[in-house]
Length: 144
Image 1 (cartoon, rainbow, N blue to C red):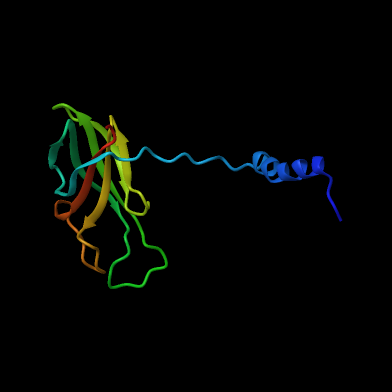
Image 2 (tube, rainbow, N blue to C red; image 1 turned 90 degrees about the vertical axis):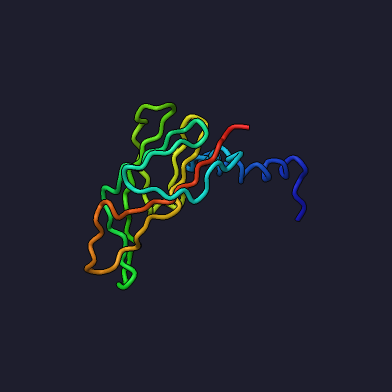
């Protein structure tokens, strides 16, 4: 069976119309980082550092329900890391990073701060004191 030429163009539009009528929202990619300014920056709660023009404060861990390494869990759990980011000497704007997010990062004023790791790794029946946490961050410039 031969499909007339005009119908071929119409049939080619059907997938496009179906996609346009769906409730899917296009996902726009985050801006690509241009330059890594600090990688594996290790901080203790209360530490503040300047990287480029950015001030990064590690305020602490407000919640930690990560799965202990010596226990079998059905969920990886989550730790909530509190930071502040700003420009200059004053305390910056508070932000929250979660270890359960694939990209635990925040963009601020042309910089990207990514949580790489939170230590120590929890163990069953071994509490972690708030001052014992160490967070590792990467700081990148988003500008040319």
